Length: 283
Image 1 (cartoon, rainbow, N blue to C red):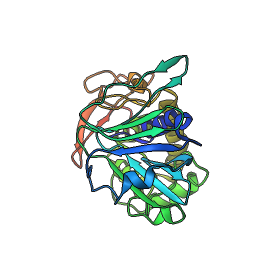
Image 2 (image 1 turned 180 degrees about the vertical axis):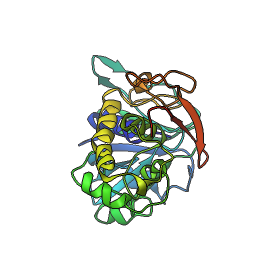
Image 3 (image 1 turned 90 degrees about the vertical axis):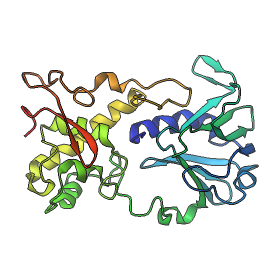
């Protein structure tokens, strides 16, 4: 599932085609994805100007003229791509309609934004912009890890006394928004912390080191266009490249990337998810 860097990369790719532009025509080609679409979604989107395109956790939020926001989650296999515009040095022509093009937004000026989702685990909804933080999909989400409210003091306080493994704590969207399996594995390896350690048993000074490392890993991943392992693509259809710089994720059996460490990356399972670590340098 796309994590914060992938969603942020898609948002940035969509922004030039969508922000400030009017949705000339919206085509909704099925009644639902993971959940039913809101009533009259095509009608409610058609003719609306996109005032701002932003991200909250793993959701893309399109604030529309008239105090309503389109909420988009890519799910496991969802892609939002742009065509009919110039992206960088190249003009991207409209592709032929595909089987899983479930929502298509024809923007004034010629751009087309297509939501394609073969597995249909994605989601879209419309909600009043002023009450967005109370929406069922967004309510209770923790601070953005790249924002000012996420700092060492906050993380130390939230992890204090928690008996869950540190990996599970960092995956908890109520503690910090947008982190997923890939980037938590990478952060904990850089921090030298065993993902199985109880969050509340880690010294505050070590917890504090996680904050800059979380930002470092996320910013590097965004700069690389995210990680393409299976379905994820950027808004122009290109793959991300951060997977080529993984230190532990999906590297079981390979040597540890930490300088001076002669350990080997291992794969274990935590709560049904793969965890990758080096037992030699992660304590």
